[in-house]
Image (cartoon, rainbow, N blue to C red; front, side, top):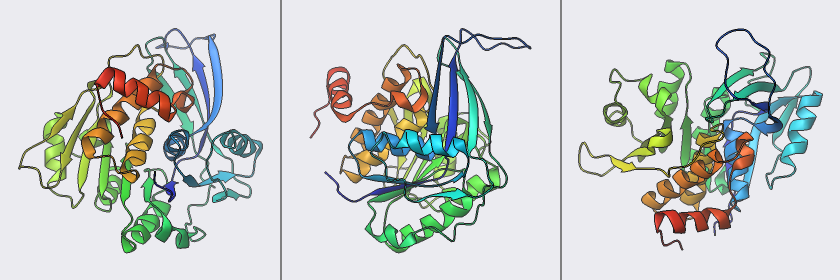
Length: 311
C-alpha cells in the first residue's frame, strides 16, 4: 500500500442535508424525514473517501473563524484526514449549503461562499508537494489549484482535476494543467458543441496533454479516453444498478476512490470499475459523503457484483 500522502485542495463546506419526499416547484413548507449536518465540499468529500479506504490524505482549504468552522473541523476529526493545513480566515464565514434530497435520491443544492474568504494561496506549504503521492484539486479555489499543480508538475507528482461546473474560461484553463481530467457530465458539455458525452469527450481530449480524460455519467457509469489508445477510442464502464437514496457527493466519492486506486497501483480499468462501485454504494445511503464505503466492504461488493479479482 502507498504510504505517501495525497493532497486534496479546494472546496470546504458545511452541509445541512434534509431528506424529503419531493422537491416542490413552488413556495411551500416541507417537513423532512431526516436531517444530517457534515463537513463536505468536493475536495473535502474526496479526501474523506481516501481516508475511509485507508489512504494517507490531507486537505488544504480555507474556512472562517466562526462556529461553523469549528463544526467543520470537529466533524473531520472523526476521519483520518490531516487538517493542519486548513487556514482559518479572521472575520470570514465558513462556506455552507442547504440541500434537499428527494425520495429518488436527486437533490437541490443551495450553496453560499463568503466573498471575504481570502483566495491568496501564498501561505500554502508547497514544500510538502515533493513527497506527495498525488494531488487532487476541484474548481472552487482556482488560485490555490494553479500553484499546487505547478509545484506538482515540477516534482513529477500526478495531478488530478475534479472538473466540475465552473466558469468556462476557468475550466478551459485548468484542464490544460492536469494529468487526469475527470469531468462531470454538465461540465464537459459546457465546453463542447455536441450534446453527446462521447463526442464531447473525444473533442475535448484531442486538445489536451493529459494522460486520462474521463466523464462520470451517474447511473450510466463512466466514459474514459486514454492517451495511446487508437484514435477515436473510448472505454465505457457501466455502473451497478442500485436503489438510489441520495446522490449527493457520489462524484466526489468516485474521484477519491479513483485517486486511491491510482496511488496504490491499480490499473485504469480496475480504478474506474471500483470507483463506480464506491459511488453506487454511496448512493444507497442518505447523508452525502457519510455514505462513502470502507475498503473491505468496497472490495467485497466489487468481488460479488463485478466478479473482479483484486490484489
